[in-house]
Length: 561
Image 1 (cartoon, one colour):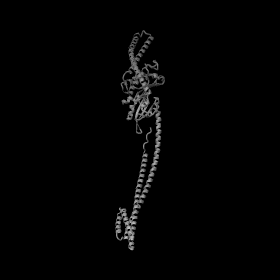
Image 2 (image 1 turned 90 degrees about the vertical axis):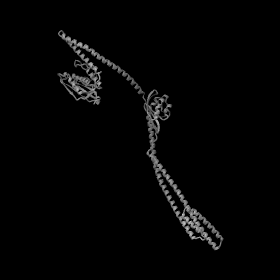
Image 3 (image 1 turned 120 degrees about the vertical axis):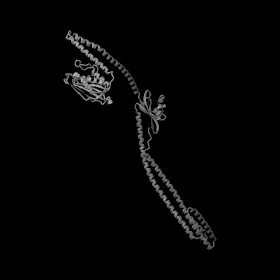
Image 4 (image 1 turned 180 degrees about the vertical axis):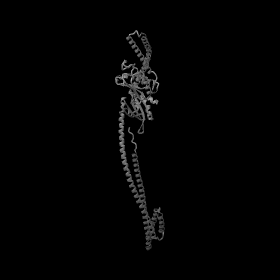
C-alpha cells in the first residue's frame, strides 16, 4: 500500500518562503495603516491650523470693524454705528473663545490670546499691537502647518518606500516560493508515480508468490492485501479475502488456530507455526508491520505439503533402514561368530591330517611308491594351506571386532619395521627399496602395522618374476583433510577391470600355482583402513606394475597436534 511522501528540506523552504511573504505583506499593511492614520491625523491638524488661521483673520476683521464703528460714531454721532460696534465686539469675543479652545495644546498661543484679551478689552484698542499679536499667531500657525505638511510628506515617502521594498521582496519570495513549489510538486508527482509503480511491482511480485501467499491485515483482523498463487489451490481468492475479517473469510477452526498469532503480531511479536488447510499443510510466519503509521500484521504462508510427505517418507525409510541395520548387524555378528567357530572347529581336523600325514611319511616312506609319496605331499600342502587360510580368517574376523587403540603413529617407522621383517623372503633376490619421508598419523599402531606388512608383502610377492624389483613407499597428493600413502612396485600388475575385486575376501587375480596366498590380505587392509575412516584403491597395468593407495583422515592428526 502507498505510504505518505515524507516532508523534504525543499518543502520546509517552501513553507518558510510562504510565511516570510505573509509576514512582509502584514508588515506592509501595518505600515500602510499606520501611515494612513498618521496622514489622517496630519490632515486633521492641518484643518485645525486652517481653522485657527480663519478665526484669527475673523478676529482681526472684527477688531478693525469695532474701531472703525467707534470712530464713525464719534464723528457722526450715529447710534447705529454703536450697535454695529457692539455686534463686531461680540463676534471678536466669540472668536477669542474659539481660538482658546483650538490652541489649548499650545502654551505660546494661549499667552498671545491673553494679550489679545487685554488689548480687546481696553477702552481704546491698540490696533497695531493687536495686529502684531495676530501676526505672531499666524506665523506660529504657518510654522506648525509647514511642519505638519513636511511630516505628512515624509510619512507618505516612507510608506511608498516600504510598499515598494515590501512589494519587491514579497514578489521575489512569491516567485521563489512558486518555483520551489513547482519543483516540489514535480518531485512529489514523480515520487508518487514511482510509489505507484513500486506498489504495482510489489503486488505483481506478491501475486506471483509461488507455493504460498502474502497477506496484510489491520487491527480489526481485516485483510487489506491478499496475493499469491497458493490462494487458488485451497479455494481462496484475492476478492474473497481483501476487505473481509478472518471470521468472514475463513472456517471457524482455522480462525481459532491463527487468531492468537495475529493478535501477537499486532502487539509487536512475530510467530511461526504450521497449520493444515484445504487438505494441504502450510508453514505460516506472522510478523508485525507498520504502514503509514498504522500498526498492521503481515502473513507469509508456504505450502509444505510435499516436504511433509517427504519427511514422512524419510522417517519411514529411516525406520526401515534401522531395521535392516539391526538385521544386518545381527547377521554379521552371527556370521563372524560362525566364522570364528568354524575356524576353531576346523583347526583340530587339520592338525589331525597334518599329524597322520607326517606319521605315514615317516613309517611307510619305504613302502610307498613315488606316486603315493607325491599324493601325501599334496595332502600335506593342502593341509598347510587350509591352516593358513583358517589363521587368516581368524585374523580378518578379529579386525572387525576389536576396539581401535588410537595413538600417534609414525608411518616411516612402521614401514622400516615391515621391510626388516621381510628380509628372510628376499634371500637371493635383487630388491631396491625407495622409502620417502612419511608423515605421522593418528590410529591403531598394531592395525596399521598389518596394513603396511600386507601391502609390502604383496609387492615383494608380485615382483618375484622381475630380475630387479623396485618397490617405492611414499606420500601422494590428496585433499587437505586426508593423508594419502602409496606402495608402488614394478611387478606383474593386473587388469584394471578387475580392480574392484582386489579388496574382497578370497578374491585372487592370479592362479595359486603362480603366486601363493589366501586372498584375505587386501581384504584385511581395506577393513582396517575403513575402520580408521579412510579409503583404499589401486592402479595398475598388466606387466607394468601396480600402485596401492591408502588415504587416512588428517583431522585426527591435527587434533592430536
